[in-house]
Each structure stands twice: as C-alpha cells, then as structure tokens.
Image (cartoon, rainbow, N blue to C red; front, side, top):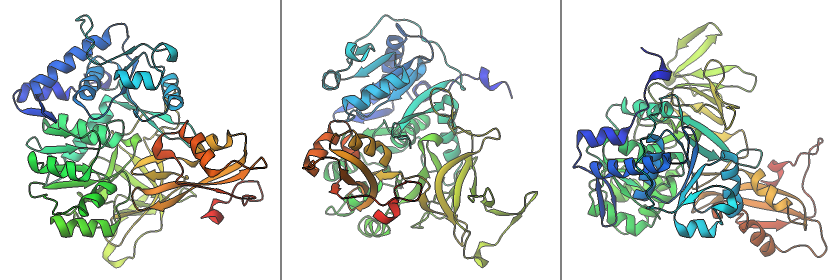
Length: 504
C-alpha cells in the first residue's frame, strides 16, 4: 500500500460519468441531468473556482438543494479547494462569522441571498452569482488526505466550529456503508434528497452517496409532505434519506404510496416509536435507524447492521468503525460486542443472558473521522485515532446500542444542532437581560425546541415578544426559543453554575 499522501482524491462524479454517462444523475423539477451533463457542469465550476484562488482556499456555498449546489460543491472539490456549505437561512451575523472564521476566498450564492445577507465587498470576500463562467483554467488535482470540506457545527462556546473532513474521510463513510449486506444503496436506486446539503447527513449520506454509487437523486429544496409524496410516486423513488419529522408528516398523509421504496433511512435525531409504528402501518415499510455526527462524515451506527425491524435502537457500528462505551472514570464498559475483562483482555459475551451494559460515552475510531476543528485541528481524534462523541448510550440485551442522552446541553431541532450557550449569548446581549438559561423542551413537530428563562435587568422588563425579535435578528429560525419566560432568579449551584436540571 502506497503513501496515503500520494493517493489522488476520489472523483465520484467523473467516475459515474465514465461508467454510464447517459443515466440520469439529478432530477430537479423539469430538469434532468445525466452524469455526463453533471460532469460537464462540475468541470466548468472547477475551472471557474480555480481562477483567483489557490489550492486549499475555502469556497463558501450558500445554496439550496439544487443542481447548482451539486456543480459548485463537486467543482470545488475537483479544483482542490475546500467547500464550506452554509445555511442560506443564516442571519447576516451568523453568516459573517462563518465567512470570517473559515477565511473564505470565494462565496457562491444566488443574487437574492448575496443582497439579503449583505455579502460581497462588505464581507471582505469576493462573491459571485450563479452562472458566471471564468477562464478555462486547469484545476489542481487534490490528494485523498487533503481537506475537502469544512462543516460548521454548533460548539459549546456558543459559536459554531468548523469540522475538518478530508476527501478520504468522506469516501470512507461510503465504503463502510457499502460493506453492509444486503446493501443499503446501489447504482440502480432513485434517492429522495430532501435533507439540506449544508448538513453532513444531506451532503454526504445523501448527495455524496448518490455520486459514489452513480445512482439518481431527486432534489427537494423545501420539504412539503404532499409534494414529496407526489415526487416519490412520479419518479418511483426506491430510497429515502430522511429525519423523524419527515416520516411523522408522511404517516399523517392520506394513503402515502411507498410501493417502490425499498430503503427508508432515518437519522439526525431520535425517531419516536409511535411515529415509526404509524408509518409502518400506513406504508408497509419499516425505517432503518442511523446514528452519526458531522465529525464522522457522518454515519457511525445503523440498525442495518443489526436488526432492521428494531425500534428504539441505533444499531451497531458500521463495518470498519470501531466503537466503545467509556465511563466517566475512563473505564471501558463495552467494545464492539465485547466487554473487557481486564485492560489486557476482552471476552465475547452472550447478551441473551444479560440485561445490558451500564451507559457510557460513545467513543469511536475509523477512517471516516474528521481531522479536528478548524483551523488548527484542535479536539480531534487522539494519537490512537479515538474520539469521544459526547453522547451517552448503552448496549441492550441483544448487543444493540441505545442512545440515552448527551454529555453537553445539545438541543436537536429536526436533527440540527442548537447549543443553549449560543442562544444565551444572544439573549444576554440585550440590555434588558441580566441572565438567561436555555433548555430543551419536547416539540411535536421538531422533536426538541429551545426554551428560555430570562432574569430582567430593567424595570419595566423587556417583553418576551421584544426578546424574540432581538433573537430573530441574530439567530437562524430553527435556533429561536419557542418560549421565553421571565423569572426573578435562576437556580444556581455553589460555584455559581445554573442548575438546569431544576429548570427541567
């Protein structure tokens, strides 16, 4: 095996175009692009983005689930630049932070977005509208170990952090999933792509997987239950990559037709067992559950490896992914189906005779892991390749993993990460707020939602409506508190930390 630094980065679009150029690659409304069409668009984008930039420069892509996103994204990778997909729904403040933090050399977006977010010269970064072709310059071929993508994920500090994913990490997750039998996805699949491409799940498990297999993707820019059901029927979709709220919505529609669907995958957030049962009852299809993180490109475990009919579990690690459960004191409680008998020994166990293991932090190792956070690779895998996820799980009596909680205060809104510290930072910036605390509350539509407790600093105090307007100016819509409650004081520990358990 040669030096990994010499291995060229995979180019799935080029490979698919060579295998079957005339097969459909992407369907968006009335537009149908073959793999040859997409390859040509990617080539044009790569040449354009190579103009005025250097290998390794970051290119921010602020687009929806469109053919233009696909061309810009794969074009950035082909040019040896680093893609930085950003949420078009970000506020100007959030977007400016991400652009400045990543040091983006170019922004690709629609004119309407550039204007609304006041990007371009005001942000200190060259911007371009779609369709502007530059000189036909040759693009630089990246190596597999080169940085491919920066994906921003909320950090406990209150500001998002850029997870650094190499070309090798992105490809490794596809190869790990491909080793599952029977296959989850193949070249002849028609895949519904409704998860936003600025999310790791939509970007790599969705769009990236379609390219890896040379399958066909049906693009959905804004999810609507009835409209997507019509697309599933019209295009005879065979595979769906979804989140819990999508399956819950479909299960409540009249006569949803999933006749052609053979694979329905759910990830990004826990799926309510009642929603899963209702979906199975009305469609005759069960949902495979996956667990992952942006930092793992993103899939770590799935019920496709264990019991595809099982509800309430996140399954087992993908082939090629090592996983252990670790107690707070460092003790290894479970390791890939084995419980260590001693630091130097492991024994296989019969889970049928056990009730399960104690909960512990999920710690993982695999080629799909990120290289740390931008820009210096901080908080990445340790010297042996292990990385603690911050999530708590236990192995049940069957040896399947069950997600319990998160070590941090992460709130999952439709699978998107919201950290209370980020919302609290905005609230505390209001002159009428002395202190705030944000917790997760259950939400029938999104799974969880932020809820804020605020101690006023003024008399009269700011109203909840005024604080909502203040938050809306600085936070994306999914991060906004669903409720703001004014309180005289917050419960504190002896060291001054807010006791959020009391608030819950």
